[in-house]
Figure 1 (cartoon, rainbow, N blue to C red):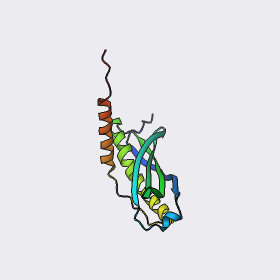
Figure 2: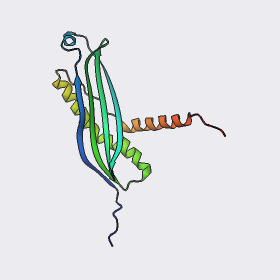
Figure 3: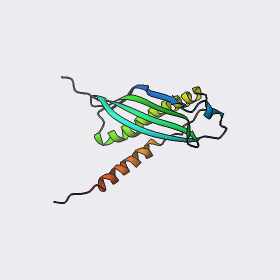
Figure 4: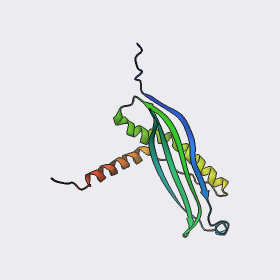
Length: 155
């Protein structure tokens, strides 16, 4: 009788661009403005199971540039990866899904965002490296605070 293989498995199955959009709602007029635009970047990470032992990790970025209150351009991008993860202790899964997987996917997202901005006729916005461990730990701390601040019902 064959024994089940219980060795830990962590493999990238695929990395892919899930969604990408570039909007320039005030072109061409805004392009004549010589002011330096303000840049706002928002990031998010989502993890969900897609099959037994397979997880999709999506890193989302929104890059919004404005001059005064007018949008110069806005990019929304979702870069995803499918990871095979098996035989990993449950207390390690959160860190694996929230730190290791996004660190693999993020460089692809950075490259695609810089490329689409440049193809739109603008100098590329180079998104900084992200410390996903610090981001994950902050989210965990916020979740702990939210549960400790929840109203308690005394009976």
